[in-house]
Image (cartoon, rainbow, N blue to C red; front, side, top):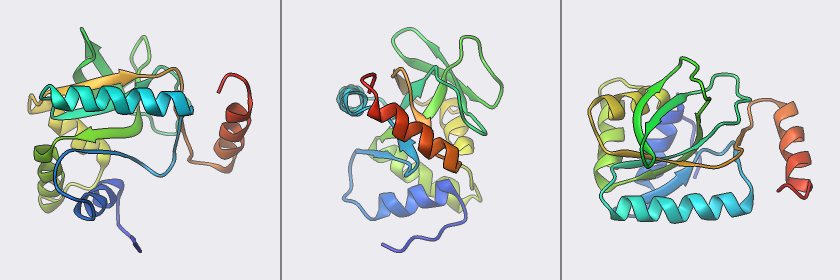
Length: 161
């Protein structure tokens, strides 16, 4: 699919329109995690969506991003806020998501209202009081620069991965 969009939110909506209706597990193209972490996030996402969550976010305390999106949590992974302001301890989104069918529609509605940033969509969903869960993994690398790709390749080649 040739996909040239003005923003990450537009890309998400285009991708969601290309797959069958229902719940979906997806990621941005620049997200790198260990294989075991992908599996853990997928399993937790499946469970949380099955329990009625509207959205699930993969999060990490590892912050090495040009423009991180911070997540405040409470209890068993309940997301309380999404912000551009640093938190202590750090917790940032990792570009991996689970969406209920309703959240898929909400993403399209956000674009129709002029929304153009994924972070804006995440903030709005949480601010509206939707049930958003977080799944933490030790490290997620967001590939923004050539050095990020080199860093990810070196990390995945180590025993740590």
